[in-house]
Length: 258
Image (cartoon, rainbow, N blue to C red):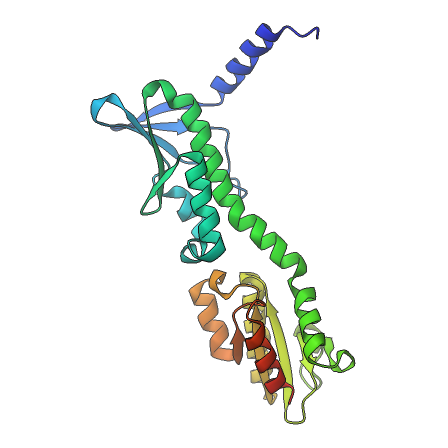
């Protein structure tokens, strides 16, 4: 190897130090880093002096506040997500108190602690992002496969344009099921945006006096913000919390397609 490792080390340290700055803010230090959330907002890190000269590095609760804009934070703490969250914090040696992520360190450990806390914040953020990406990319197809298992495939209509309504092509129903009673519709809800769109479609159908029943199937009902879920429940019919609730899905689909 012909590299000058010592020179490379000096260059690395110089560039990294240039990207991390400490600024006094009252009785605490604000720490500027090159770390950013997916929406472009920077990580928020502060250092407070503790008794005995130790330091507490903290995000002051900013990470969970940032995630709350598009996620139900209570849901992140439950079930498998909760286990993953606890694992991320435990593995990184990071603690949480009422939404605040922090590490207590000696002043000499500040460099490694900044990266430790930054890595934990990234992992917590990715926990919601990766889950959302996976669900959105496969959920509708997974739901369709479930419906085909319950109802004759040839009788299921996808992206159904309800006849007799204005702008039918703009108010598509995910699935129309066969029924001897009234129109029977299924909507797949993988995320907040689809919850809002389904609310608009359902409100339009009701405004056009269409006689129908509906079933709302969620990828994970617990991640839909409360206000969006409330609006959707006001115009929709029965709900299935997730595809994992298979017996509930089978029962309600059979009832809808009776």
